[in-house]
Image 1 (cartoon, rainbow, N blue to C red):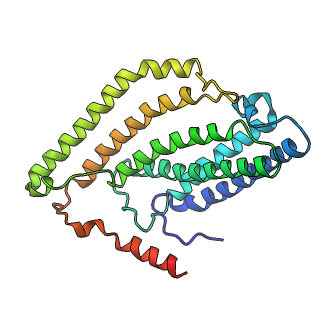
Image 2: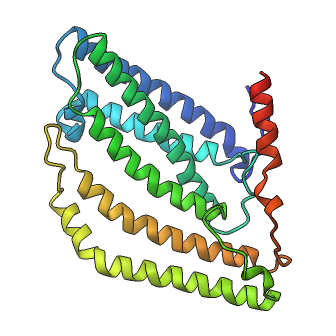
Length: 270
């Protein structure tokens, strides 16, 4: 079956990427179901704790590899379509940000599944987990970071136009350049001040200190610096893409998204 949605950047690779996504997702679902059934009904002893050291258990390693391929391919595939209320990607870095945005979307769905599994396991099978809450926190940390990058790409971060709209275009451009310079200065100082600590946490694989003991500090801290750098690059991409656009002027009416309102009306009607 051919995908009829207009391709943004994948072109001929869209359908092959779709097939990779379907195949890897099916493989991940099968392996996950196999591990869950073994844990609940056959007492195999393979739980999520083994996922912190996947090389020790071949079935866990296969599941991790399949899941990683599924999430990456799905993120790439879904980044090739534009949402109804999304801006058209124009900057040199927009596609990278969109891939991370789709990864954030998938991670949110995974977080919901984790909580659903915890509820079923606790109240149906009376086998509560030690890891559901911490895994949700772990995923939510990355979702928060990826969402910041996406907000920068979509220009949906907080912007105050009261003074900006009074400027002539050359002063607006000057303000935009100054904003990007300040963003890069903040990024530089953040990396300068936090690099040694994040490196040390990663190298010693610092864990959370709980029963499941995931390496949340070892992964989140470096991710903060990495995503901050990506946000700075996206800010530069926005500056270049918007440089020759007409002057912007904003009114309270601009805050009303007609497409989103129409979508809400359609949903309520259905």
